[in-house]
Image (spheres, rainbow, N blue to C red):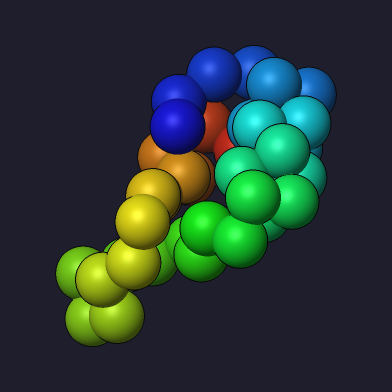
Length: 39
């Protein structure tokens, strides 16, 4: 997921409501959030 802070927050909540987990290189899961531009 890569977008504005508001989009990322909303999408994370939506994805987690479906039981999907945020992942990382060290802990792969169903989606990742691009954190380069997060405030």
